[in-house]
Length: 244
Length: 312
Ligand SMILES: Nc1ncnc2c1ncn2[C@@H]1O[C@H](COP(=O)(O)OP(=O)(O)O)[C@@H](O)[C@H]1O
Ligand SMILES: [Mg+2]
Image (cartoon, rainbow over all chains, first blue to last red; front, side):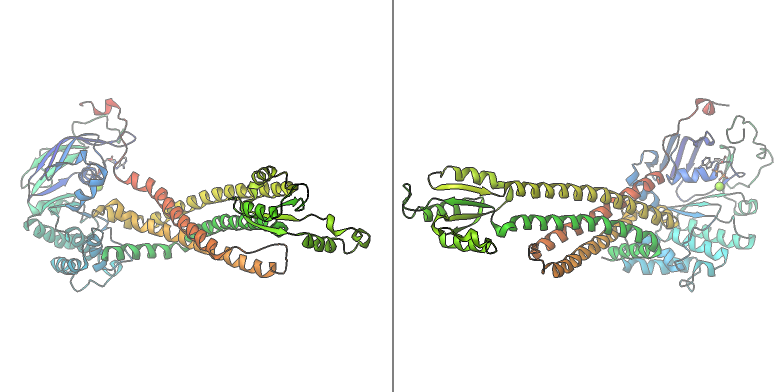
């Protein structure tokens, strides 16, 4: 479903955010990207969405080399990849229902399809009675459910989540993780960047650990940390522009 | 249809949110197109009045009397017929000796001593109205070949040329002004659209995130620019029309100036001005959008220092 080969991203100014990353993610997998702040998790997700272009290397998503994608085809990539972010990215002047239907309307879906599909996905995230509320009238956890509903309403085969529980308390986070787990079990491939130890340890899913722009561990059914590899001081690197 | 409704709704929300900036853009279009349209009208007035000048007589050819110096009877009528058939000539009138005497008496009514002449010395003439004032030399030249019949040709050549060149200057001035102001209107609309995008950058970035195509994102902004251009142009056309109507009401008492611009002129040019406003709006939006949408889709190639990529 997702394959990265020797992917390197250097930002303007010389920061190497991702260095020589190789990764294969199968259809239906649930993968945690873990690592401390600044290790390159968000950059990887941006590259998968073509919000940024690789400096070197190749990325395939659903069999297509997205590094060669012409600009006009990028929207089609994004229609097959749902996204969830730490800050929800909801529109404050639109209701819950409008926020979710917006994602279908901008794809030009007819109203007869939009209505039932929005209702269905709001039921899935447990907000069917709050469709007329505005985001500010919801708790953080509920807002994140809305953003998951928006990401999933189009039934994309892939869901990318960048620290979706970063702004939520542990109890609320558990609810969000249950939701993502259910979406994953319905067949979607889920990639989630996080530095929440408890969640990773509880889920027992594949863990890809980044440290200082490199992959230093890739483990099935892993925990956030292993005793063997110290990630805090980054081990074998030097000369990184960001830290220099 | 539903899709169009959605896009139109987005454009309207946009217009309402940035009322002040929108007002600026509309005003720019309005002022520039008013001046352009005003210049067109003034020019048309000038053209009509140059043509109508001297009661529509641009050339007078004084004739030898019939039956004198070998001028055959009926030669005047034949000449009148021939000249009337020339394509440069809009109208030709025959002025017989009696009419010439009447005109002479009127002209010198306040100087009785001048009236002591033999009326038969005053020649008959033909009075020619041209289709286009600039053609007077051509007609003068054609008349010259009839020297056995024509005693003398009088044109208002110099005066005509002065008016004609004044009209050219006004034309150029109007055109230049319209160009400069039109360009500023386009730039102002581009800025409006840029601010509109800035105000809605969250919305636009979410649209991009969920996979809206670029044209789908663009259309509401282009519609917005077009509406601004159309409103500005509409106001300009209405203003010039109203101003002209008022001017005509005042001007009808001034006999020497004709305000007889046909409504057809206003309809035709009004449509042109409206189209121009809409086009300026679309152009402005496209300019305002280009930079924003270009930057969004991935970075420019980064010049990488080889050393940072060397294996460590
Ligand atoms: N747009 C950017 N321009 C320059 N440097 C950036 C940009 N985005 C991120 N970085 C840098 O790239 C590195 C990785 O950042 P990021 O991918 O956000 O890490 P994480 O999500 O793991 O915290 C950091 O050193 C960060 O400062
Ligand atoms: Mg991050």
